[in-house]
Image 1: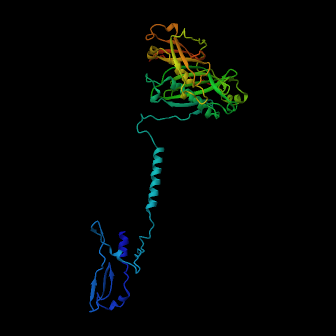
Image 2: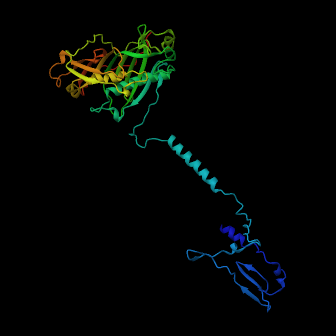
Image 3: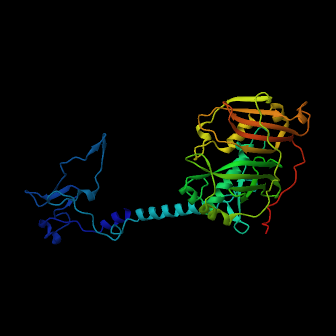
Length: 420
């Protein structure tokens, strides 16, 4: 603006025609029009009489506003004259372009900082896990989990439900990574066509050591054949840093028609989908051949009644998640056992499913060898039964407990090598 004003001062001001012959006269003998001040020759004498413009300067809120000389220039029709064309005021307006360039650079810098983010301290928690990956010649699936603060219990260790959910999650992700996940929950494309789903019938779990908050556990899982119409799935949970084995689990699964809710044989089309992923190996947990006894109210020492499924307890197959059954079984465990011991192993047999409107009972009895002082005793074994109020069995179970903070964590397992 300063440059524009300075440039405009060099442009001549238009004068009236009567002053064209004033070049040969004295200074002041011509007529001019500068900033509203007019001069014209007097009728009685040759001298000039200066007359001020009759229009008073404008006022705003009582303050006189001085009009610049440039604003006084008027055309004959009263319209203001256009600004003079100079080099400065003909340049493009760069402000919008500069604003756009600045915005682009700021956005790029933000994205780069997000990609290049690194923890400022080595002890900061990092999530080194994702969907998992296939390892060991495409047979074993591996996934890491970080133990969250809301997943630990009163003992400052991960809860049973948390560990069992890790096993279930890796089983589903294994199917997904192998390309065998259809529209159903863990069902292959051919299973979806035939309305078939997987249901667990038996599970054995050994807890060698419980992880705590901030630990990152590595879960490996693989599948094998189990008889003519079953599939066995094994899990091996270890510390991702040290490799120490924490949990071992083995389970047997069969197929059920989700419309009729009856067990089904494995169709040849489905067998062709899953057999290429079978590993010929022994179970990671040796099978406990002892029979699980059926409890009744007369035998049970501890009974918990009125257990009902909530809507959140149902999975996409519209039956109660098998992990929920474990929580119900432990509802009737003796409180002294829970306070002084921790679960070291369990064996479960799933008899039937329960629906959303079912009402269940949890029954527990302590084995004869453990009866007495439950606080000071060493190993404790309990028998469990989860049943409907009318008596139908849902789950039979057997659990073993060791004193808390015991150092004997059992035998360390390894991923089995595929045998011939």
